[in-house]
Amino acid sequence: MKYERKEYTVQELIDKGMLCEPIDGNHGSIHPKTADYVSSGVPFIMANNLVDGVIDFNSCTFISEKQAQTLRKGFAKSGDVLLTHKATIGRTAIVPNNYETIVLTPQVTYYRTISGIHNGYLKYYFDSPSFQTILNNWAGSGSTRAYLGIKAQHKLPIVLPPYEIQVKISRVLETFDQKIKINRGINENLEQQAAALMTNYCATTSSTAELGQIMSFENGFAFQSKSYLPSGKYRIITIKNVQDGKIDSQGAAFINDIPPKMKAGCFLSIGDSLLSLTGNVGRVGIVYENELLLNQRVAEFLPNDTVLLPWLYYYFRLPSMKTSLET
Image 1 (cartoon, rainbow, N blue to C red):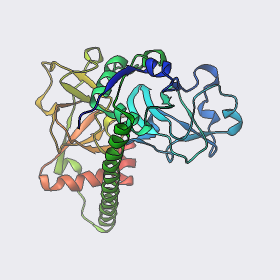
Image 2 (image 1 turned 90 degrees about the vertical axis):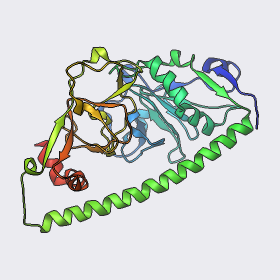
Image 3 (image 1 turned 60 degrees about the horizontal axis):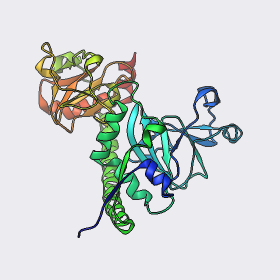
Image 4 (image 1 turned 30 degrees about the vertical axis):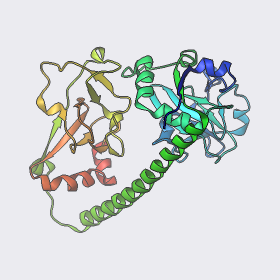
């Protein structure tokens, strides 16, 4: 089926009355501080609360209704499309109807559609590789100061097919997302069962061995941040990319040229298992893509016998082991 697609800038869509002006959170002195957080109230949404395309309200902080009333902007509501644009670039979500309103930090922008734009389509368009590449390039991804402010966002391109096609695209992709969510739930359940078995085994076994007798660690390379690029051939995996059970390369810095002194072990392959050594010590993840390089503050763990790899993966995820690593 052929249909016409038109490309607009965000500013053009605002001028046409199809999109409200994007707005982020409050900057400066009125920005809520850690001391302002309360146990319940108005959700205060940061970039790291956008996880796998949804808002993780379980991990977010809250501010009081009274303080929220003192803020000038950043009030997102149900149906708004969120886009992270500072430090952690390119995460998206649609605001659900869990709360009457939420408040955003300056890391997050909301996009509110008016007419002719389906919010589900807009969210998936933001997720597309082509848009993510533009966003990361413009924001200088790979830098700790990666940022694309509101004025710069007005120049971003948005490709729109006819509205009815937008709806169809959104519905198809929502179906895939639901299947992914179900599969993720199954995997999480299996992970919990495996962890329980590991905990039970460690509580009942009487045999012990030093880790050095059954495995070794391969540290990464000390890459120079001045060589980082917004895009390139290789992504550099650092602590922030080691998530709960997986390696998420989103937001990683790029390089094109391999440093002469970098050892071969820093080239990662699908199936490699990594452990963070500083900062968030004890995070474990498995590599699911190629063209990744290992930073010095993360290590690959290498068992003497590959049969031990799944065992070590779950062993490092034990709360008692994580506590030992942190101390």
